[in-house]
Amino acid sequence: MKLLIITSEPLNPSDTLSSTFELTQAGILAKSFDTSILSVTTDRSLAFLIKSFVKAILGRSNTKFTSIFRDFKAAVNYMLFRTKRAKKHLIQGITVYEGNVYPSRSHTVFSQALNTWVKAGLNAYGAYYRENGKPDLVHAHGRFLNAGALALIMHRKYSIPFVYTEHSTYFQRKLVPSESISIIKDIIRHCAAYIAVSRSLLKHVEVAIGININKALVLSNVLDPVFESPFCEPPPIDKRFIFTNVAAMEHKKGIDILLKAFKRAFNGNERYMLNLVGSGPLITEMRQLSRDLDLEDRVHFLGSLPKDKVLEILDNSHVFALPSRVETFGVVVIESLARGRPVVATVCGGPENIVNERCGLLCEAGDVDAFASNMKKIAENYASYNLAHIREVALHHYGTKAFEDRMQKLYNSILNDLHH
Image 1 (cartoon, rainbow, N blue to C red):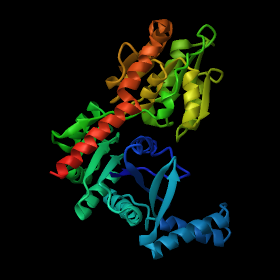
Image 2: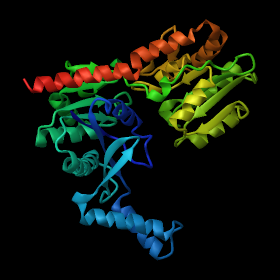
Image 3: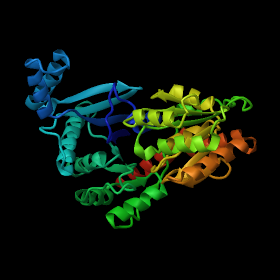
Image 4: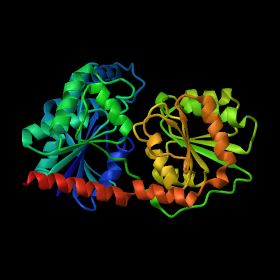
């Protein structure tokens, strides 16, 4: 069976993090199916590039002329040979067909941006089709909507069945554009299977679009196989007790809540440490907050790290802390549980479906005092957690074998129904 996965986020050799969920799933499914990925990268607008090019010619730009000229040339090439604008990459053993687009201007209207993205996606599909023919099944991952809109067009034009998985926090954050509602309903109506990664997300989707999705499935995300490597005991807790968080430095991830809670829980106690893995738009602000709270010696900002390094950080930690304001699932939670590390998390859309009293503690999102209390409680009662059991349960529910079995059953059922 030929399976084409569509990601809503960029995926190319210089950016494998944005589509990490899709890349992980493709790697697992490639064992059973002929699997490829389709992605789209939206580059800077033509208007921006033209202005930059003119400034470079006039000597009014600090950016190197060669860099600007390269980007400008690529944009002109796109204008002249639009249907040929697609790239092919081999990333972690998976063939990726990438569509690239240079919008005529920076899109502020949702429908314009979506249409531009879909056109680039169809160009990438053309490159895929020329080498592979028509796929038997498309699996689109929505973060937000792009992949689903493209899969819907491909279904209508080429009669390709598709599965759609919703990941987006737009529904919880009330960011869904009104003009997207009819598209979402059409995707649900025409897809062979509609999947939400948590029950909370499904409820928010139903509220946003005003209908019950009776055909919906709730299927969790999957562990990256890296985190299934042999169990490693945590370091002794007599000298250091280490909390870890892995997240983008964004408002929705609640790093400010974590820093304030850590301060309140362990003020002045040098035994307790906090590792922060990740980068993003709030990194400077969070570093300043750490200084303002006088936590510089106990909070370590480690930046973005590859998965094997994240594994090492988790294995050298005791507890994972997730203070998010909103999540659709929380893959980092299952990664930590797979390493046998209990979790302190918030009720924010995903973790409440994963964390229970045997593997961690929960509190309401945004409650600094409650999060601080749970951090103290889990540290004081650390010996009561069965780390090996935490790992065993996580692998059983979220491991690659469980995911592979679920998806094989789903895909085969869809294709069998189509052939009868």
